[in-house]
Length: 155
Image (cartoon, rainbow, N blue to C red):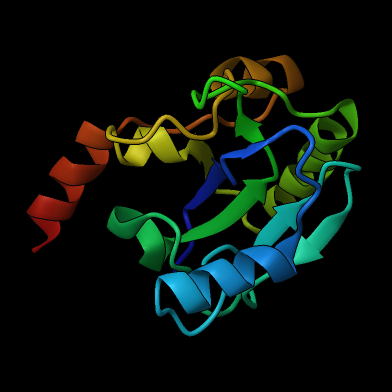
């Protein structure tokens, strides 16, 4: 499995819902019928990193790019009105930065993208990921049409 993308997601849960990988795993297995949680990593409200699916196993988090990506989910992202909301904690943002730096040391050619960048029907991760990456000197990736064109040419 050649990884070239790190896809950032949110759980689309409200700010007061302090869930983690175990709860998301139950949703993915029981509700979706999957074998395991779709994400490789989950960052909880207090900023703890939890392991989801093993990193060497293909994820189930962004259909168009599952075979070439690592998936990270931030808990939160849903406002009281049921819409996307940037309600992530400082601790989550700091943890995300550290995890991305670690992964980029291991996979230096990888780029960071949001779920919405590879699937325009999604709003996730519900914050300005491009600005977040720019402010931290992290390589922000490509838009969905670029990925889809490349995928179509490869087949």
